Amino acid sequence: MAECLEMEGQAGSGQYQPLVGLQDIKGLADLSHEAIRDVLRAKTGDQELVLEMVGQLEDMSGTNDAFNSSICSMEVTARVKAGNSDEAEGEAKKVPYYFVIKSPPKFSFIKMMHKITKPFLNEVTWYLDLLGQMALVESTVSLPGSPLHTQCPVVYHAHSNYYSGEATNTCSGCPWFCWLPFRSAESGILVMENVKKRGYVMFDKMRILPLDHFLLTMTNIAHFHGRWLAYRWLGEKSSLGEGAWTQQQFKTALNTQKRVPKFVYNQLMNGTHKTVKRILQLEGREELVDKVDTFFKVSVRRQLNHFLGNVSSPVDTCCHGDFWSNNIMFNYDAEGKVSKSILVDFQMINFGHPAYDVLYMMYISTDMEFRNAHMAECLATYWSTLSSYLDQFKPKDIVYDEAMFHADIKEYKTIAFVLATTLLPNVLSGSQISADGVLALREIQRKQAAELEDPENVNSREIKRRVVGLCEELARDNLI
View 1 (tube, rainbow, N blue to C red):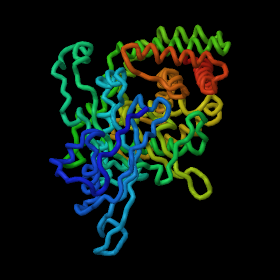
View 2 (cartoon, one colour; view 1 turned 90 degrees about the vertical axis):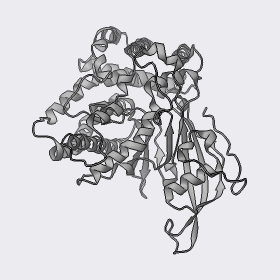
View 3 (spheres, helix red, strand yellow; view 1 turned 45 degrees about the vertical axis):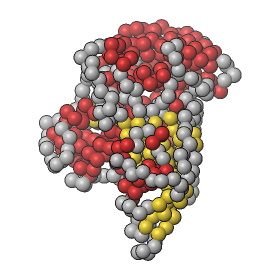
View 4 (spheres, rainbow, N blue to C red; view 1 turned 30 degrees about the vertical axis):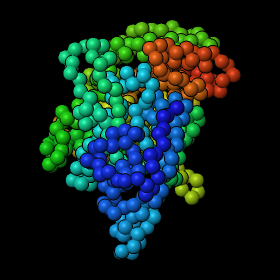
């Protein structure tokens, strides 16, 4: 459950103490009436903006959403002067603002892990830096599709103690297990637009994403990957102008996979191995157990470099990293047909092969029946968009064609299989888990195991159905 704080003071009450700067708004406790006003003044450019109403923070976390962030919503009404509204010069208008406010999680176990992975820093960096870097491309050359910032929520304010340098690692030369207990936990705040108020809604994660939705997401993620490939290749030619990051800066900002110690990956793989094996036993699929055993004991260990980002390809680019239906908001036209989408949650952005995102979505938000019927069409839709960027920006010395793309997809299927079988028992779980204390991981695993053992549990049945389908599919294709 997200921990939401009530606003201090009502509109027009109290004495205003000027802020030293917006950088002083570092967390929920700093989000006073005056702080909200100054955030909106900075965003609108209206230094006379006055708040008419400030609503209460309301928890909007779903089951286990607080693992990644505490999430609240809030409504504010402000009086905005002419030039910032549709009214005539000299007049003002009441304008509603609908916020989603995110802050790092409160659970001690998750906070400890985030000291290594720094997901809140990733999202703050996305909004404060990476979208600005992409604007250098979009203002320099003509690109297909819509500007990337229109595919994300508007952010009004962002702060991370890691981004601002408040959390430093004075023992950077020591092993992670030495400095981890003494390093500051992530803290910060993101004040962003609530896109639900623009008609965007989330698709039910327990349902298989329909084909029209999936084709839209494949087109949009191909634009996402293609734009970052354009950024990378134009940057390598020093064609982005003043303010552009070096390629080293770009890759360092996206080194999220390399931050995780191999020990952590090994522990995750061990847990996933046990879970998948137990699911197969519960579903009477003993003929797949030996193949799964061999895969996790041998193949997964050889592929760990892929997880750690130590394998490169000609089309490595910025990946969303957590690309599935629960991180996409959909918009529908007057006839009820899906027409647009917006991406949310950039806490797992990374630098790697675009197949990572494509198969992540394919294996978490669909089932074997969908993939048997539509995978070829979905991959063709993705490639037709991505290839337009390759044709326009790919350096002459780089060779990458559709056959190579499909070969990479095949190679990454086993990586995506591990990711999906690790995540599905978590993201589709209907049990609220409290990840607190030193025994949190054991408690999480215990509750998940108990849910899988329950044949009447609807979530459990869907988890097992999708995991068995993945095992059957990869065994059929001789990949496990």
